[in-house]
Image 1 (tube, helix red, strand yellow):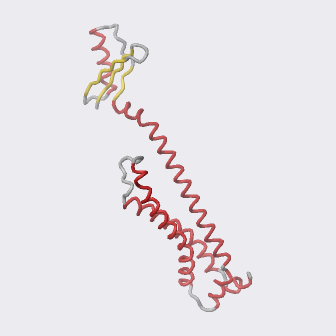
Image 2 (tube, rainbow, N blue to C red):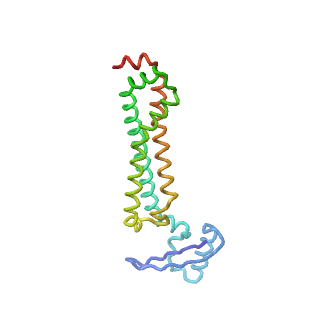
Image 3 (tube, helix red, strand yellow):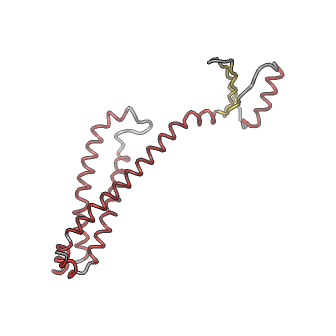
Length: 191
């Protein structure tokens, strides 16, 4: 750990003294002031800050920006969830007569789940494929903006794709469950 002592001379002129110590900054601060003032009592020792405080103050704007990015990404994911759910639910509602007819002809619940899942997840998988191809193509441009993360990280792509597929699967499961529970006679009366 380290301790930094600033001394200002007005304007942009400043001097600083950096000490390396194993002691906490709070305990060494008064002793350091006393040692400096025994040499020259006219030296103003205004601020004592630890290196951790300096680094934290330097990184605070970046942390705030990253927090905003995370919040906007979470809002975008929520909108994706609602959008997928809305489209799949609408599609299932429009296919209620077909689902009722299939149930009346003997289709089992797992077959209907599979049908609704495949039709609901098909556009999501196509969109994911297009998104991965686009991200790989634009990866070189984004590479200069990233720090500590490769734009071609397979783990990052797999995590993003798996997250979106889980969201899409959950959005497909709820309308599928609702459609399978409808009595065939009610589903056939819709039309």
